[in-house]
Length: 174
Image 1: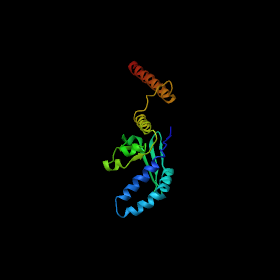
Image 2 (image 1 turned 90 degrees about the vertical axis):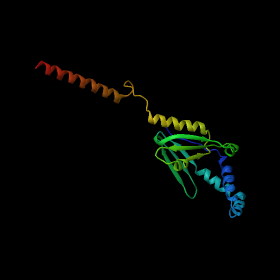
Image 3 (image 1 turned 90 degrees about the horizontal axis):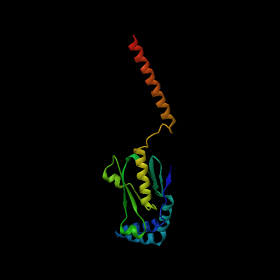
Image 4 (image 1 turned 30 degrees about the horizontal axis):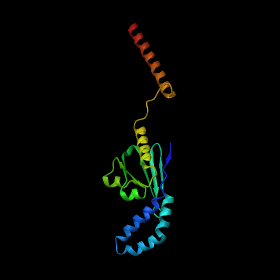
């Protein structure tokens, strides 16, 4: 089972506005922000969007992003403690949301670094992640009628019990 997440194209204008706003917060960044808003930001956002990828397998969640510096994170499902759904007013305006991951064995600063913004149907994808994690932690009970390995082990157990009974009977006959 492998699921590929789809990203909302509205993440592109969100990134342009978000990064442009950060640039405008400094005096040095204001001239850069003008260049950013005149087209460089749209070009960058399109290429960033094209590189976004998120795959959910039965054992891990893999996330890729980046243009110049490419980042790939793989989070084993058994390490995921919780997936938080975040949707603030600016994200809502762009019809986006963020999924944040709390993982086992990491400090709070590292766990907050693991987030996905812009996944379409984020609630459903969150539920798939949690269901895959729970299926991995609690595998379904095996049934001898449908599992040939379990049926063979049960047959071996029956034969071993018969051998043990024969040995006990032989000892008691002596």
